[in-house]
Amino acid sequence: MVWKFEVPNTAVCIGLAGVTVLAVRRVLLFWKATCPSRSLMLGKTVVVTGANCGIGFETALELAHRKAHVILACRDLTKGQNAAKLISRKTGNQEVEAKQLDLSSFKSVRTFCADLNANLPKLDVLVNNAGVMNIPYSLTEDGLETHMSVNHFGNVLLSMQLLELLEKSASGRIVFVSSSLHKYGQVDLHNYNTEEAYKTQKPYASSKLMNLLLARELHQRVSENGKISVYSMHPGMVRTQLGRHSFMFNKYFKVLCFPLHAILYCLYVLLVKTAREGCQTVIYCALAPELEGCSDGYYGNFEKQSWSPKANDLDLAKKVYDLSLKVTGLK
Ligand SMILES: NC(=O)c1ccc[n+]([C@@H]2O[C@H](COP(=O)([O-])OP(=O)(O)OC[C@H]3O[C@@H](n4cnc5c(N)ncnc54)[C@H](OP(=O)(O)O)[C@@H]3O)[C@@H](O)[C@H]2O)c1
Image (cartoon, rainbow, N blue to C red; front, side, top):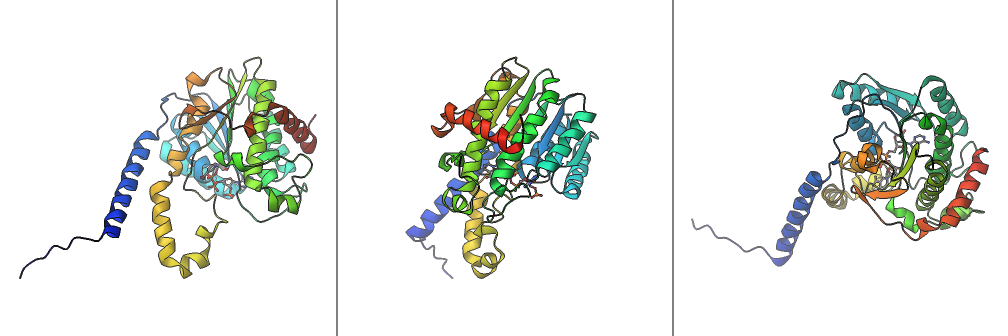
């Protein structure tokens, strides 16, 4: 029997070459995506919002590895407690606990902050990580569109109510987990809450843009005496449950378009960071000693990035800050 080698056709060759390039890229991504700072966090207390899964969970896990007292602030307490137990088991750190925090409810945020203010001597790092994306239009109990409430106003109320506790730390840090998609958002200070605005203004991107502008104005106000620094960062594209409302996660799409879903999923795995990789710049902003005194940066892959033109509008930042205080009932 004569074995015949058949030269694969061009399309197969291109396909194989493409997959090889993506696989190599994936391996490089893995090696490159580790926070360069090895600092420990012994004696430091950190709050991570939305820490029961995704980037928040991996952030809490890494900070627990580095010996911090970690508080997982989660809207579902049972999920939070399960995550805290898992982190304690994996790291041997017994100072990991979960507390209930629903950012879509001002009442819940106030209760959470009152508890922390009454029971913690100081807070060293607040990681504003929790977020939602592309969820259907809905209003929270405070009458706010849900993206705006969870991704922006809830973060404002939380951060402002924890400022005194952060000031008690030698060098408090607030880290805003933003998104490069903020560039596609728009700020309409008079119309951010209506169904019409939801349909026309890309609510995820707009809420992230408002949050970034808020972070900039907050920096102006709190970093003067050097006690608190404010950092914003974007993690890149990360494989988490954030897109749970997108078609990729739709059960009918998974079943009815199985081959297409399988191809898209393979590309997703090859191209997109894992949550462990995605949390590394959060860790960097939370603890890197070289960032001390460098408040107001926007970071990606451990490097300071330039502000997008929209996030560089400091007059608008002040207006967003004033509006946010008004909406959240803060003075
Ligand atoms: N994944 C990406 O590609 C990407 C890219 C850029 C920026 N980001 C940002 O990264 C952050 C983390 O997202 P992720 O990708 O890790 O998504 P994820 O896996 O969906 O995690 C989001 C977390 O936020 C929590 N959360 C949602 N609504 C909440 C509420 N009302 N109160 C308190 N917590 C709430 C979720 O809790 P439940 O589990 O209970 O829902 C979950 O723990 C977000 O701010 C997101 O905008 C992600």
